[in-house]
Image (tube, rainbow, N blue to C red):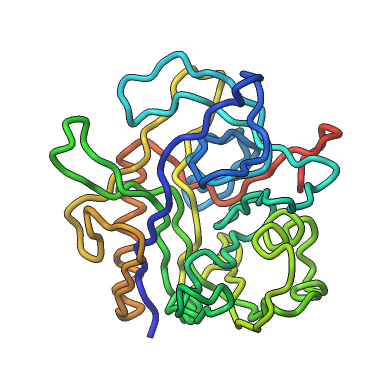
Amino acid sequence: MPSIVQFTHPGAEHKHDRNNKALKSWNIKNHKRKFLLSKGTYVHENQLLEADLAFWGEWEPPSHVEKLTDCPDVFYPQWLHRPFLPDTMPVPGNGVMYQNTDPCVFNGPFKYICCKQEKKKDKNDINSYAPTKMARLEKGSMILFGSTAKSPDKSNSFFVLDTVFIVSDYIEYDTSDPNALMKKGLGAYRDFVFKMAYPNPTKKGRILRLYKGATFDNPYEGMYSFSPSMVWKNKSKGFPIIALKDMDYITNNLNAAPKITEVSSERIITFWNTIRKITKKQKCVEGVSFEYQLSNGTWSN
């Protein structure tokens, strides 16, 4: 049976490097969000339009950074990040772990590959892992990626949404296989996401899934993945991450473990449409594809 999944990841905002206010280098610390600007497409009256789109999401490779001058409150972004991918991928090692981007909304269908799909069974055995329910989701499931935020006075908590992911298909892979996903036509994605999550094969095999998100052109039962976005035209102010509070299937103060609710496809479709209405009410558009820039100035698509 498909599920509605509330999935929390760290919500703190990335800023620039300490020694370079125009750059955020590849993240080697904890995951954070970025307010991103890229070329993309969005849905307008059931058609796709191209534009420069700004949106909240994850991009752990480098980005060019610009300070936003208009921040009405703590929920608005302070920095604008333009994502780019360097010519040469960094090589993890010597205690340095380069963060992966998961989910990844760039360059083709949205993808989700490993985060919270496994957990340690024995804290004393570094190779003792087992798949979680996140590694066994059915097609048609909806994953709401976001974070738990607190009101300025800390009196209440609520869920803030950055990505709506509709599972349309998946590829199972073995974490102990050095050639996992090699022949799946993933291009650079395998290098800057999968190889950062698993720079070396695990000693024991674990079967996880690379999930692919439904697209506007190839929807699943009429649903497609999207990120709430705004059309960007030389603005100085972004938008706060969209709040989902006091709703069915949503826990206001959810912590680490995803909340998974098995429901009928009809209920998922209804809730998906509810999220779309909230997105529009916040004067956002549904961004359905995004690009990152290459070092030579061209774009990923």
